[in-house]
Length: 194
Image: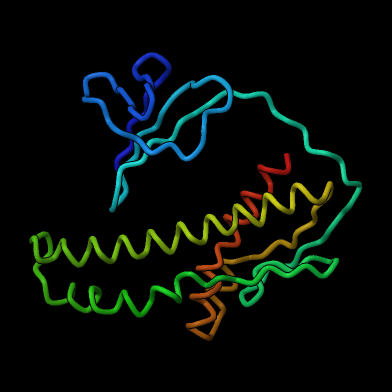
């Protein structure tokens, strides 16, 4: 993964084009308009694509007080169960791509590392994993945003994920624990609630 960080002075955005110093103009697909002043841009290359992450400085908008508190339980089958009965199922996005990863994974074992024939299935595999990761990240963002908007106080259990994985006897359960990404969930919840 490559990352380039531009501060306030070495870039500008004109319409749907991003102009970076010492580089050509790049067409960008903006998902939403900028809120506040544009302060920086991070250009990032993953296995599949280039991304521009724009940093804006905007006033923090306080959420409406709801005077409601909730406890949440994290799990593998049901990602979130709240104390007042709301359930968010675990989409298990990695399970959905698993059958598609087997052919390129098998193909990699017979290819010479670093060759073009090796890179093709490796890139396909990386794109599949990135897609599943993005689906899960998006789902977690939506759930945590909803929780923060609906409740003033949120109590979540502490999960010792490392211990659960190391001591788990069932390989499938260990895989689902890791792919449920509990730490990302608690991270998103904590920064959105503060």
